[in-house]
Image (cartoon, rainbow, N blue to C red; front, side, top):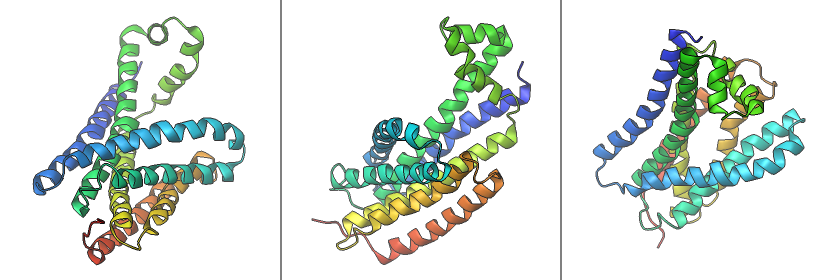
Length: 265
């Protein structure tokens, strides 16, 4: 049986993962009506294609090779995310968004990119776990696993069972941590969308594209180190990410002011 707190925390977390990015995009669009709305969906599509499809194909090949080397795994994981996601932005700007070069459109694109990541990575995950928890309370874990696994006992006894076990101690603190991480990511993606936009819209500034890759890798590196056990304290990870993201926001604002909109013809 899962407690009422577990059920409530899962429900609130799933709702916030959906509401926060959508609200951010709606508010920004309402305040900047001149922005090109498709930028939002291009950002979302870029994440899906480059991060969830292309990057995962590379992971399928590389991770089995490097999984036993903690340092190499951490470096690879951080760099892969930066390379694929920032390259996705670059491709999108040079194709679909070439006639819509403005900083505000770049911000909207970033909200789409980070927003869909929050919805998929946190919102859908918590929703699935919520459904499993409610079903387990209603009909028992064994019956729930049997139904979800469609009678395949091997599936029922491995990943699904592990997922259920992982949320037995889930609470509002866990939920707040997950939502906070997504807010950091949403903010960072918005900044990187602006940085990569400046790299393609300003002559001689293409170096901003590899800079975005490096910054992205640096943000992800502490989390990768935590996953491999190099860093053992999750508060330390979030402290590093918070300070780093704040510095990136500050730098991006300065960059946007120093490089006003000037589309490449």
